[in-house]
Figure 1 (cartoon, rainbow, N blue to C red):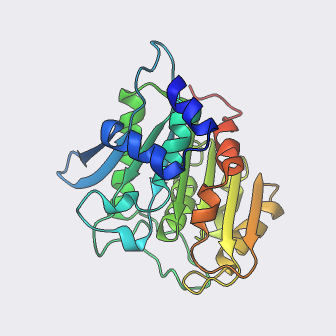
Figure 2: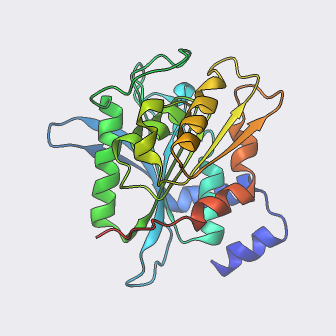
Length: 258
């Protein structure tokens, strides 16, 4: 760990740091529930977690372009930054499930001006939530530092999962996504930092604006950064900003989990 920190200080790129940690510490696994449904995922486990220490966990939801069954494509965007930050500033665990082709984290139209949260989660979302809870039961995860973030389709997933389980998460970073504004009241105690480009042609910028307004109207703990002139990909610069990840890691549940 000391060697990694020193390397970062002299300017090693995030991609290079990820290359060092990827082959050694990020593992491809498959989760299966009691009904036999499966979900591929990658997990980064830091080495040498001290006995008795509990560490944060970050759940990452990828976008539509990374769906499939190769258990690799979900690493394309964002995960390298999260793993690099966790390696240098952790220890912390990163979990990145992969949504199967033809399915969604949230069963809704991404280009629609609004949506009502489906009464039941999509199958990939259901499995991702079960996966997270299983890891929390089996690994030394701090229940007061459970974070979630995602991009595009995964931005929708981020809003969806905190709306379904508002008592589980310490903070969320949804990027170019959207949620059900009518459920904002349930999220008022979760610190949220949302991001969007004002020239996004894939997901209307109004989806983030509306959620931010709904949270502000009910006294929520929300921040918002809108990139002028930016299109759909604002996640690259967001995850590369160390102040964003530092903010995420600083959040803790105000009411400790039992």
